[in-house]
Length: 430
Ligand code: 4AD
Ligand code: MG
Image 1 (cartoon, rainbow, N blue to C red):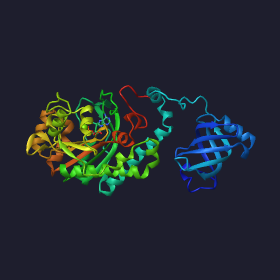
Image 2 (image 1 turned 30 degrees about the horizontal axis):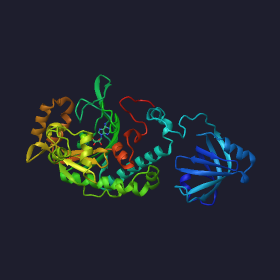
Image 3 (image 1 turned 30 degrees about the vertical axis):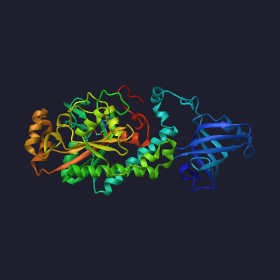
Image 4 (image 1 turned 135 degrees about the horizontal axis):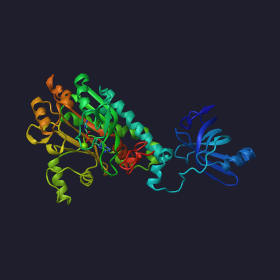
């Protein structure tokens, strides 16, 4: 019977056949230990010379890394293995013999590994990261569906820019110019007016010349948008959502977290309510922490975010940023026109901003004023103005960057390991 490594528990003490690749191997005169993987998991295959034919034992000893095989044997418990099972191998059939696999068990530099990303994905660590990414996506759908949100897919090819024009990817759209989406938000606002509470999950593109461990050129964003919801109510949904995904990973990805040596005590501690500080307070905190040069009105960089996060065990909301450093659509604080009703959620442990969100301007005259200030043409953005003309309502939304969230939850250093095929400043291959 052909089965998968993930089904080992079901087939305990039975003889099964697994389709696998040989990840690694160790052998002596009498026994060979095969580290096998099939995508669903990892298991050790033990080949005992006395228990198999001479032919199978010498085949086991000669197997090369990443050869594909059918192995047959009994699944037994193995308390020493983190996975809990091993296979007593009786038979091996080579499907394809691999030779000179470039990623050997020794250390490789990041550029070499990135050049071989299509193969690097097979490694135990990358496997664990991708499974956790998958779990976060699954938990995202679960959370928003159970909260009554409708999944909506905004376009990727657009005629408008949500987050400013400096970081746009331009492309030709027949006779027109188009951009790759930086954010689905503007379209999600239209969708919220049609369906109430909506969320999107899709790729977004930023031609940012940033070469940091937090920046990708192509990244995936979850963007909820909610009709009749205030800024405060949006923050409550954000913290419930983040708590939900962390808990979901803790519940369903124990093995992956242990493969990654993640300190799970830090994650178990992620419980709402998350602390909230204003931008003004953040400026003061930064001054006290030795950032004496920072002035009110300046945006925060990675070192600032990290310094603020160090004062908290939970993710922290920084609210009420100056209007001039935020996007045109953000609603001003009614008590103070120079700041907007927005928040960035800063992850603990130095992973930086994982969510950006705000209440949206719902007043038509004010939005028209912003169009003038930001030179937004009614040709490209007329439709967005319509949302303020026909039954305008208070509404709010946010965007969570998937890769930064995966980096934080998995504890990996750089976002390049959190997406299958990262697009970076100097990398479009593979
Ligand atoms: O703060 P941002 O730019 O917000 C928006 O795009 C809003 N329109 C979202 C909304 O309200 N619907 O981006 C949101 C999040 C950031 O907090 C960050 O997690 C992630 O997207 N992000 C990036 N992740 C990786 N690489 C980049 N270059 C990123 N830029 C933003
Ligand atoms: Mg932001």
